[in-house]
Image (cartoon, rainbow over all chains, first blue to last red; front, side, top):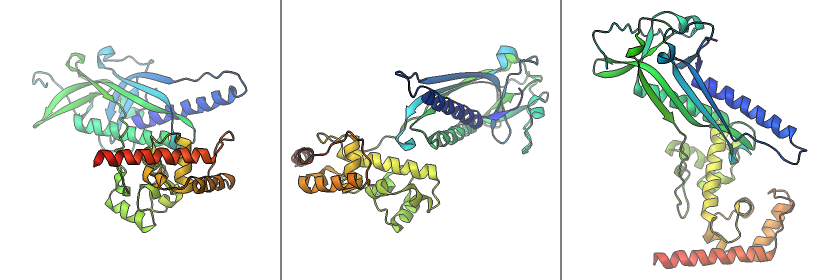
Amino acid sequence: MTSPFTFFSIISEFLYEANEGLDQATQASKDQPVAFTIPQIEIELNGKVIRDEELEMVPSNAFESNYYGDKGESKLKLTFKLVPGEQNV
Amino acid sequence: MSNNKEKIEVKNLTASSNVTAEKAVAPAFAAKIDSCTLITSIQKDLLRAHDFAMSQDRSTTFVLSDFNLQLKAVVTQEGEKTMLALPTKQGDLDPNTMSTLNLTLRPVPLTVKPVTGTRPVESIEGIGSVLGGRLRDIGIADVSDLALASPEDLVKLRIPLTKANEFISMAKLMVKSNIAGVEGVDEQVAELLVVAAKIDSKEKLAQTSPEELTAILSDAIETGKVKVPKTFNLTVEDSTRWVASAKTLVDRTRASTQ
C-alpha cells in the first residue's frame, strides 16, 4: 500500500491492463451481433508526491492514519481514451 | 511564499537506488523541487508512456489523453529560486502552510505542414541533419522514400523500433496528404498509388496514363504487393477519373499562382 511508483510505471501498468481488457472484450464479442467498447477510462488517485531521482507517488494507506488529512494529499487524475492508430495496425 | 516564523524542515532525499517504502513513510522530511524540474520530469514520464502505448501491437489502443495532478506542496525560497517542498508521510509541516498546485498536461498532435515538391526527410519532426544524412546514405532521400521504407531498415541505423514506426507513419501521412483532394482517392487508394505506382503527388498522378496505371495497380494487387479488401474493385474508369481530377487540381493550382 505504501510502495512508491513513478508516473510512467502507473500509466504503463494501466495502459497494459486496459489494452488487455480491450482485447478480451473484443474476443468475447466476436460472434455477437453487437459489441460494447469502453471509450474512456478515468482514474483518480489520492496520495503523496515524493522525489528521489525521479518523481514518485505514494498512494494513500487506508490502514494508517493520515497526518495531513485532506489538506495534505495530492490527487492524480488520469484519463485514458480509446484511439485507433495507424501505427498500431 | 515562505514565512520565517514557520519552522519548516526541508531535507533533500539522498540519491540512492534503494527507494523503498520505508523511505516514503520515514518521518518528517520533504524533497525540494523547482517547478521547471517538476514539469519536465512529468513530461519525460508521459513521453515514455506514449512510446509504450504506441508500441502495443493492436489496431486500437488506449492512450493517456489528459494528465491532471493536484499537488500539495509548501512553497519555499532557495536563494533567488522558488521551490516546492513535497511533503511526505509525517512531519512538522502544518497542513495550513501547504499550497495547491494544479497541473494539466495534454498531448497535442503535431501539425503537418503541406509542402510542395520533394520534401527532405528532415521535414519530419525528430529527424535532424545527422539522422537525415544517415538515411540518405541508405537511399532514403525524401519523405516518399521514407514512406516506402521498412522499420527494419531504420532499426539498422540504431533508430528504436517505436521511433522507426513513428517516422514511417508520419511520412505516409505526409505523402497521402499531398494526394488528398483528388476525386475518388481515399486512404486506401492513396496507399495503393504510393506503394504500387510510387505516385506521391497530384503532379505525378496528372502525368500518368490511366491504362498504364490500371495495369500497374492490378498487378500489385494480384501479386500481393499491396493488400486491399476483397470488395475492392479496380477499373480503368477509376484510374481515368483520378488522373482527370489530378489534372484539374494541378491546372487550378498553376492558374492561382500565375
